[in-house]
Length: 202
Image (tube, rainbow, N blue to C red; front, side):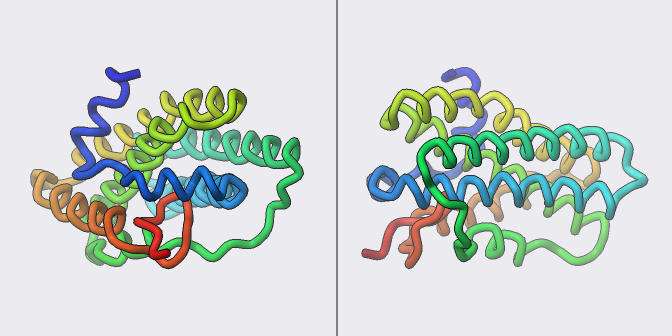
């Protein structure tokens, strides 16, 4: 597992704070509901890229596979919630993704490159949090979250490779920019607990 996670930790500028882990353990119902939302949104993001960039064959193949995997994860979380009598209720979205996407450039191909970089950060953070919290959960959730690590780490690398392939310049500077933004969201106070939220304000 450490070999799998090494590129994730190299990519992210910070680790999940202990305060988030503590809050997650106290609010596992909300964590699962929002995790379910995240899987659905990840599938939707992949599908939207397929429609918007239909001329890019590599992207079509990778996003098609990613969307199927994310929807399968969505179904798996729903099954876990059903077994635990947790209703799939509406939750407001966290600030995390919207704040990152806000800094994406508008002109192509830079808009695509930035969206792919943001996708890489979202997948990397998900993977890092699965690894952080899995050992602290009950046996079923522990196994499930560990089972997600392989696919989520591949999604991260797929997004990052596509960003590099479609950029006409090195992406290092953009990655550094989004790394700083992402770390600030993870380490600053957040008013609502969500799967990608920052440090609990209360």
